[in-house]
Length: 575
Ligand code: SF4
Image (cartoon, rainbow, N blue to C red; front, side, top):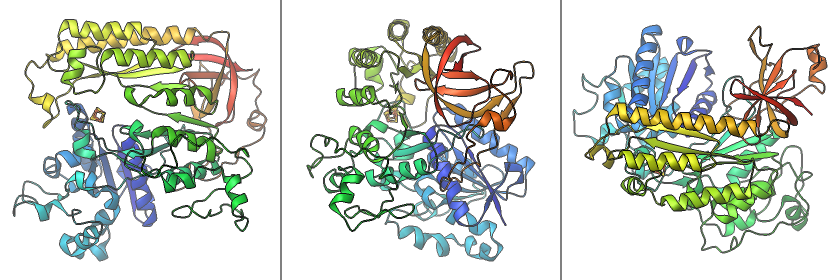
């Protein structure tokens, strides 16, 4: 049996794409290799957000070509979409498959690794073009779009499959089961692409316009994860707050606007059997198995949700997940400041089932720089929004992306950013140094900030963020916090050893598997909390790393008493 390995770079959306690609290979009967050195097909799922990201991808491709010269190297992702010929020219690269062709990656890639199909693969036109064209007129290989001789020349050794990303509306989605030994908080991408055109950002050009996973599919995915035993799901997207703007909200959403129990009453011939039931009125057969778990009372319909002319909104999605799934904890990843509506803030603040966590990209505290960036809000809007979130959720994690060294950023501009970071109640920051992306308006701007100045500004912001984070953590000493246990146990400070607990079979990336957990984990491990110096990693509802004394089963929500802050984490005991 053939083997594959997918190496992901970059953001959670790329990881979600990677999970969907793994799914494609599984469906075609290939097994995931333990390491790229052992795989027949190695897929590099790249990022292009900075020049360093491009460089990382090139270095990884070169490394694997050296270590596993016989493997088929396939390069996909944002870098592949942006600069396919640059990658195709790298030694060892068999195929470059842009985001435009990613939904059929395995189909395109596999003939090269299957001897009986090798001949067909030599002539891509006879193999892939008809199938791809069936997806839509624009779904064609670059080789058919480019002037003759421009691709597949001696310079570009790999085959290139890239076309206009704006012609594509497919959204790849598969839950991501995070770091190898954590695997308790799957990430579900529900939105891709972006309609904004921030002047520094290449993402719209490599991921296309905003598109959303329909509500019924999101609910089905979340319910499948809940059935699989998962207790926290993170929903993510490139511009998550824009979820639904491409979807009509009328008929489909109103079909979802009653709780499952209410719909069963309306359709007495519908029965819950085994794992799922199909509820009349849903578009494509939606498995629900939570009739006993969802609230029996009818929730208030989101305002205007029955108005067929209205577009769906992100708030509808959050409310529907709460109303129509039995998920214990929903975590929302990054949402732009203008999408944190009063209604969304209230929804997050009022439900114990939504993690108290707001990630709100800021980028700069200078009005002048925000305008140059083509950001859609002014610093005072941003400030108001963060203050509103803090007032509604006094213990929430509040994080931001901040960019240092945008072209033309002066010392006074930077000082405005620094002061905003200092004054606002952030609990963590992601600080990026500006990196010019070819083709973006910012790359052509004059007054590029020297890199040593940009890096120094980055350092100042990081130091400030670190101080704020410690102060936030210390404010919980002596207090209880809710946390979910992860799949990592440290055997004790002296040994500094880390074990991944093996009682849970890692889930298949294509579908979740029920987790069988022992009722008394400590007993099963032959230790008791008091005697053992081990501690278990956990993540609090408000996004802080917590080390729990003793060994605890993974994937459990529990309440911990915080005792101290040590090594960048809270230390606590189960209360
Ligand atoms: S909002 Fe701006 S920075 Fe974010 S993905 Fe869209 S264009 Fe890029």
